[in-house]
Amino acid sequence: MSVKVLLELPTNDATTAFSALADCDKIKVIELGTKFLALGNNQLQYWSNDEWEMKIKSLKAESGAELDKLRNELKCSGQKYEDAIRKHAEDGRLLSIEVTGQTRARCSAELEELRTKAERLETKLAEKTLEHGELYQSISASFQAQMNAKEQHREERVDKMREHYEALLLHEKTMSRDCLIKTQNSTMKGQAGENFTVHELNRRFPKAEFEDTRKQSGRGDFIMKEENFCMLIETKNYKNNVTKPEITKFYRDIETNHDVQCGVLLSLDSGICAKDDFAFEVRENKPIIFLHNVSNNMKNIDAAIQIFKLVLNTESIDLQNKEVLVKLKNYAQTIKRNWNKIRREVQKFEKTMMECALSQESVVREVFGMINVKY
Image (cartoon, rainbow, N blue to C red):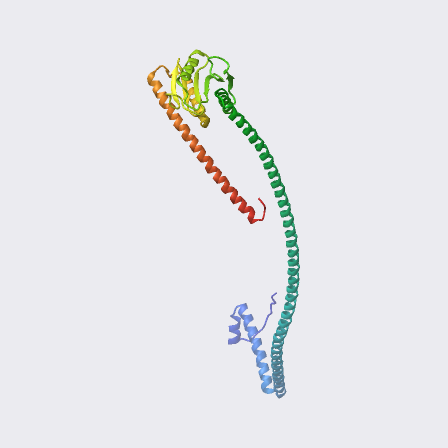
């Protein structure tokens, strides 16, 4: 808001210069002049008025006193501040001591509680250990009882088996004694050997059919039939070698029985005159084999039958060819050697396995002995 004021000023250098100024400068000149005028009046009053001077001095004295008062208050405030700092430090120290004591007391209480809990857990652990020990004893006793029962059952089975086999042994002894009595004459001895042979053949070839032809003239002792395979078997139980007339009779039986495909002459406890063991021949285009001491080498019968089946099932073999016959004879001897070698290896393997089984049983006994369990 602006107020326009009209002033009539005398004309002189000062007013002329003032009139030449801009309005804003004029306002500044008026403000400065007013302030200088007020300061000048105050100074004039100070110079000319003793009362005013006294008043000013009084005001200064009051200001000085007020300043001293403020300084004293400031000093007192500083002292109070230092006292407060010391008091705060002391309170902090006391509070630290109090907190430390409370913490120690609380930790002691917690430690005591943990110690009590640990003792309680140890007691519980001891009870559980005792309980587990009793349970282990119970299980061990039950296991021992079961093992004893099994051992008793096994012993009972062994006793029954022993009784059974003793009865069988007694039966075999009786039969052996009867056979010994029968061997007092050659006829009964031959029958015993034939019975032994047919028994072994039935045991070794359960699928085959054995026809007893001992009462039929010119048919050998037995005819073995298995599917398309038909073999004549002649058995001799002599102390000495089988004689040539018996060989001739065997040849005749092979030639006259057209249903048989092959034949074997067995000597149970002796050799055969002028014939090697496993000797291979052909009569009427039929392969035949001579076997020695068969009672101790019954597996030779298996090898002979395998040779027959191999020859009969191979159509390309000409049994009238002498070169082929020589090779077959050689092969028969080779098969015999291999068969004996296989039997020795099987016996060796059986011995090794028995040794391993006995060693294993020994280890098992030691293990059971470590845990105090009867094996």
